[in-house]
Image 1 (spheres, helix red, strand yellow):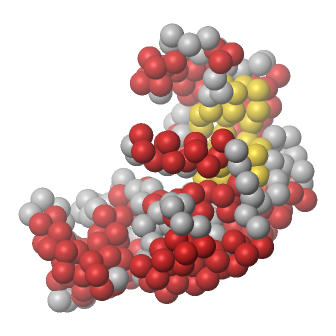
Image 2 (image 1 turned 60 degrees about the vertical axis):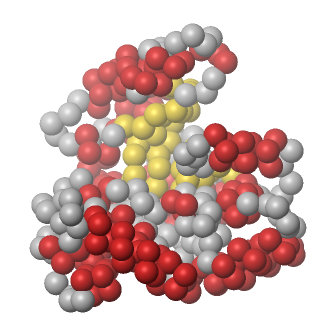
Length: 318
């Protein structure tokens, strides 16, 4: 927030849209939501946000958010002109989303995880969640369109499939176009880590062309290939690591494990894991407190997967 405030300081306020979220870990009795919001405004150096969200709602957090008056806060902020639009980001099943929107029709927009790999996922339910938003008349902002980079670095067979269908188009462009082609989607958020990725994303979105029927079929085939190749569907958000008592770098180990399962990376993944053990706890150090699983937006059985990582890289199950 402080960095973005410095970057935006020289630009007229009406020349950009600014969004922020109420921090999920600050939804508790020890924080004053209104005071937290005011500090966020001050850090960003603005008088209002264009979009303001409650962070990472699911069934487990809904009652607490309601009891602490967070939805009332959103309504008050809109009345006072301190945010133009309000909403929440969401990580749960479609029936939970329907419950929230039925109880809180005042929200303007919903942010959901949506990509072609999770389209019919039994837990993430991208398609079903999108349909719930459309029934309630809420525009959707898409997060995880490239699933933490998973859909930007595809298995060889999937890469060749996409290249044959559209020579020169990046795997990320396919994933983002899939999300942007869905009815009801207002915006697609894409994590970009260098200028080349920014230029790639803006190039095909500047004159956006939705996917046609044949392209959708290509992605269905690609999703099947990726699903068979990806052992752990981790997006690398790192929520799981913040409370780990032994500080296991869980997402990094899962990335190596997925590479290990793809033969062309196997030897290199083992070497990189061995190098990480010089400064990090091994996967076998997991004490199964399950704090990580409670924090995981993907609802992964992390402790079980860490045993698999230990078996693959350490020769034991911890």
